[in-house]
Image (cartoon, rainbow, N blue to C red; front, side, top):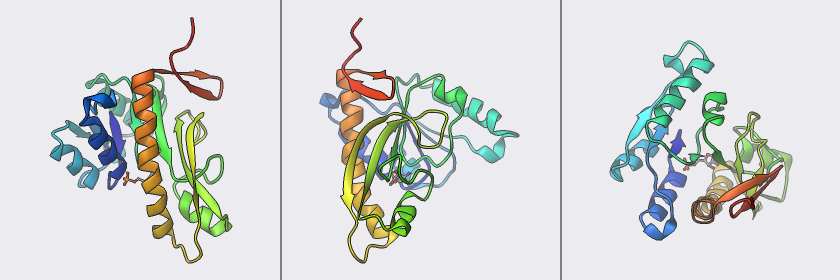
Length: 198
Ligand code: GRF
């Protein structure tokens, strides 16, 4: 299942890929932390069940995390994909499912919500995107895949982010597809495709 907070173009890439049975995974539900976002509309158009769990409807973040986990559990996913989900997940979710996130920078550089702006402000000539497992930190979990994107003279945040997102969508689809088809296991900070040897 996929969690979104915004336009959902990464979600769309997963929906498009999953339309082919050979992809090996299906999107069983789409969850969001807010209403009226294009990501939810994309899910509805694809006839995928959706739900919204708002932080503001809960007294504490712990209660929100538990409520989110309860909604996710209804759909019995094998994997949760955070695709532009702009909230920090807590232990109710993270202890129950593996969670994969896509981040628009080459972690550990530029973690957090403003990765593209921060990379431009720093003046790097190369940035990119990272698909990683989510742990309790902010963008600190084991890296699964990364790809570089060159910064061009004259790039602003939107132009650079759009070029990164083009790569991000392809990389996320590749990673989720391989995880589904080949299995995966973690060896410390290293994520390997294929099932662990017994
Ligand atoms: C992506 O760049 C993601 O890494 C970031 O927000 C963007 C989401 O884009 N956290 P979209 O909603 O999938 O179009």
